[in-house]
Image 1: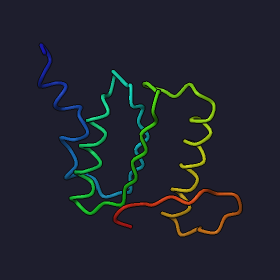
Image 2: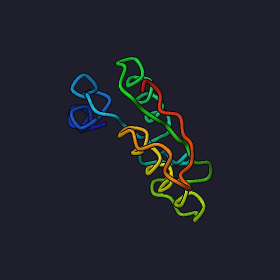
Image 3: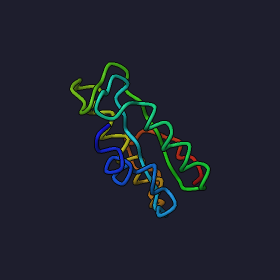
Length: 102
């Protein structure tokens, strides 16, 4: 693309070495703005660096979720992620998730 260098500068995958915090990635399988392969590459890079991370890909979703069940799942997953990361497990009604590298 015409602005290839600008895209590279703004791409999170180009700055993984600067990351040290946990990362939850919620991705739509049909996203054309941020293709799913970018989320998978980011997840792999975080795993390689040893950063606690979790990736969830939602079938039938694009950039921004529209299905009520996926919106609810994303919110529940975010709460569960925070619970794991901050050691607040056992919160009633919170789903169980696996956070890699934790």
